[in-house]
Image 1 (spheres, rainbow, N blue to C red):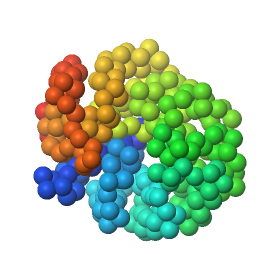
Image 2: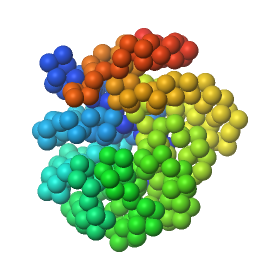
Image 3: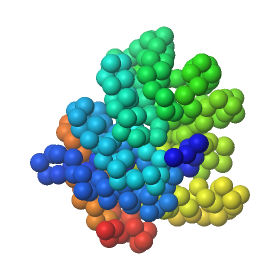
Length: 299
């Protein structure tokens, strides 16, 4: 599909039917919405996609559906990390066989591991497949932070580790990844509100859950930056930032789903124990969406 990932990657939300099953038909519409909006790739089973609340069979179904609907139009990144190494390897090998272009591997969550345990897990998963691997650094959920020098050393040792999604929200750490280790690994920022700063700094791109809601708008900011039009990028960014800030300031997954429902995509609420946003937050989201009339009534 592509030799090098760059740009805006949509961390796809997962739509559910009223009885709680994955809504495959609506999932396909979300894929098309992102692709039609010009994004550079789509991500199945990321955090925005609620992978941790799914069974292994559901995760496989999700990956297969996204790959099928993408139909080679954009790269598909499959998040295959798990609590156990065995499960992560099995999910990774399935995603590779199904046709994923890149694997994203979150470090195990719930029980904070030592750095040696974490690196052994990542190396084992990367060595179990042939396709490129993206490390997923999410210390808020895993209890382990992959520091830039450790990431660089791991990428040197395992050539198919080509990317990292850094979701620390720390631009200082991201800057070190970008400026010290870009010879071996490309950095994607997993903090949507840092898009402008991160791409201007030299990040390969941003993986954004908000791209479910406003794919073309995020792509416009990115394209302006690539063209060297900082003023144009800032103008676009100023226009969409109120919606970005509203979504990022709320419980994120429920907020993205509420926004999708407000624009006409009935994706359902998050899986419990996560709950939908409250009425006050929903009202703020609706108001922010109304300021961007091109987003309303998405069908």
